[in-house]
Image 1: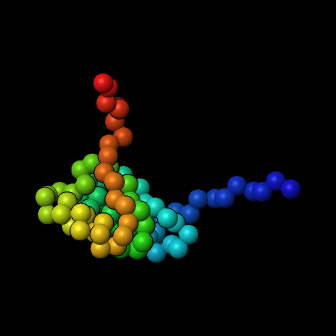
Image 2: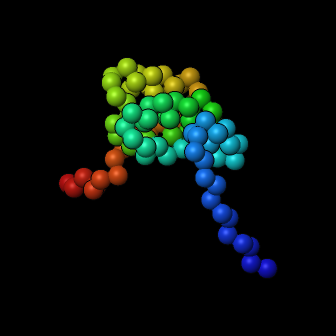
Length: 87
């Protein structure tokens, strides 16, 4: 018997999304001012986080994300979805 495809669940509030126990990671590609808060919420709820650049709006937000890595034991990676670097 073929399994029916899963339908996506739409969350309008990120706080409800990060509370989901069956999610291991969070990809943050929201408006720039949401990058650091969303990444911090994800890490605090036990999610690994991939965040688009910039990771924050100021250096302090970057420091908070660095501390969150060791505080919550989660990986946080910042990168860009742009073209790969050529050598």
